[in-house]
Amino acid sequence: MHVNLLKQVQDLFENSYGTLNHLASVRRFFSPARINLIGEHIDYCGGLVFPAAVQFGTVIIAQPNGLGTIRVVSINEPGKVEFDPAGALQRSTPTHWGDYVKGVFVEYGKVNVEVPGLDVAVGGDIPGGGLSSSASLEVGIAVLIETFTGYFSSDDNFANRQALSWLAQRAENEFVGVNCGIMDQGAIALGKENHAMLMDCSDLSISYYVVELGDYSLLIVNSCKQRRLGESAYNKRCEEVALALSILQPVFGISTLCELPIDLVNDALDRIDDPILCRRVRHVVSEHDRVSQAASRLSRGDIEGFGKLLNESHRSLQQDYEVTGHELDTLIGLAQRQPGVLGARMMGAGFGGCGLVLIKTSSIEQFSEVVGTAYRAEIGYDAEFYPVEIGPGAREIMSTNNE
View 1: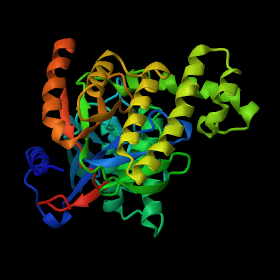
View 2 (view 1 turned 90 degrees about the vertical axis):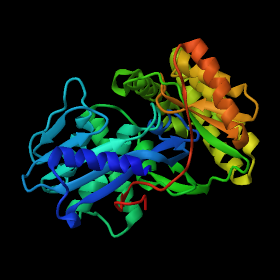
View 3 (view 1 turned 180 degrees about the vertical axis):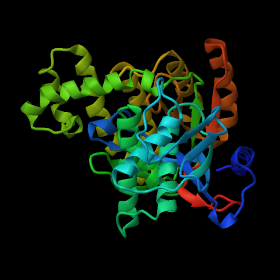
């Protein structure tokens, strides 16, 4: 988290609501973004994924206002969102950033959590798309609510964070109307410094893996092609894999596509007439297999083998799942051809947004210059490059640092 972001949010809070008073009642939170090392578009298919929380994210400052209403302002978006947390809240048309906040309050209302009136300011420094800014906001608001209300369903902190993750996901699914899986909320709520999470999206069980890359680093590359998740083909892909599952379920006795073993994929494809659905299934099953391989190779220190899996993942997302697009394919294609790069792939929902590159640390500066120049020449505008630091999950912070 950058200290400057905290100051920007605090300045906005004071400009919107007046100088912070009764400092003991002021609470500050940081909810990170996340990367996914590998395992794209399979969290909603019940698969294993391999995410990690990172240094970018959302700062939230809140204080009781004694008014019984929630008031929210953002450094990233204009206007003020104001609502009664106990009221009958409705989604905006078109979707508004405030819907991601409202949806979380709605879900806590369903479990009879009474939230006091709060003045809230938020702000994020999450680059581009594919790092899950919406889930960062949702999980941060959930941590805020649990802090101000004292609501915890269990004495087990890990179990509480699992429950919080499911709740934040429901907010996006049911209130915002985006059929996201659980990976984003789970990674942000349960992140651990310097660790990736081998996450089972069917039950949110997690095994933590130390990320030790030696002379190599992870680099976020932002295509700067904007997308709107709810307006993209994301929901269409969810529908396609659900249809494929309905065809294969009675034959193979599976409850999710990711339960289909890789050695049965060709048999499964023979039972599907639609070539589009065949491609979708091939991606899901092969990507799920790559996740297990990636965790194994990373734990053995096989960094080169891990990089090859990133390249295979992008090819599958491009050719079988068809969620990349010209900008991402240009950027990742350029990246894969550079000296010092072991692997690169698109990350997130796709259709724009960011990619992830495994690169020799000493090559980052030259890479950014060469790829940036070539991308600008092909696409007409600049890409952005951000080294990755893997950090802890969403948490309350002090006013002067990122603890």
